[in-house]
Every structure is written in structure tokens, then in C-alpha cells.
Amino acid sequence: MVDVGDEKVWNLVMFDLPVKTKPERSAATAFRHMLLDLGYERVQLSVYVRYLPLPAAGATAVRRIKRNLPLGGLVRIVNITDHQWATAFRFANEREQPAESAPEQLTIF
Image (tube, rainbow, N blue to C red; front, side):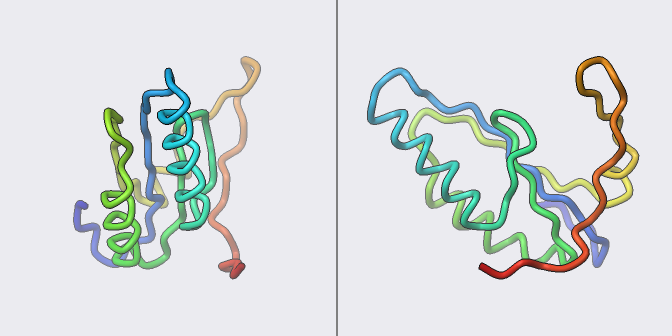
């Protein structure tokens, strides 16, 4: 991961996974559930995001993701600063949408 110092970041996981066979679909589902268990939220079909007030905390998640990569899958993990995330353009149904804000507190399950 790129060192962004102490700046708050959004950690994005983007992936394309094979889903033609039942075992591939099961592996893809397990991968998505693992991301949810790590605290990621789904923002698009194969894009999950997690807010990290302390970017160093993302290293543990990256190690777990690396250990659970489905065979034949393509996975990309990117850190985006909180400022970049807030200034990104968002559209839904041809209309611009307001930016999501950083979570106010961490939720513990």
C-alpha cells in the first residue's frame, strides 16, 4: 500500500472473480462475505470500500485479503485520501449525488 502518512483514507477493493461454476460462485461469495466481515461496504457490484481514520490499520485487512484471493480472480486495492473521496463526482439515474461523509464513529459488531 502507498504510504499516505497519518491522513485519513478510504480503502477500495475492486475485483473481477470467475463465477461460471458452482465452486467459483461459492469462492466469490466467500470473498465478498470476508470483505463485509472486515468492515467493508459495497459501493458498486464489485467495489467495496472501508474508511480508515488510521491508514496503517489497512495493512491487516490487505494481508487477510491476500490470504483469501479466489483462484483466477483479479483484485486491486487502492487507498484514496478522504479529500479525494469527498471531491469525487457521483451520479445516479443521470443526476449528480452528494458525497458520502466519513463515518462519525466506528461500529463494533
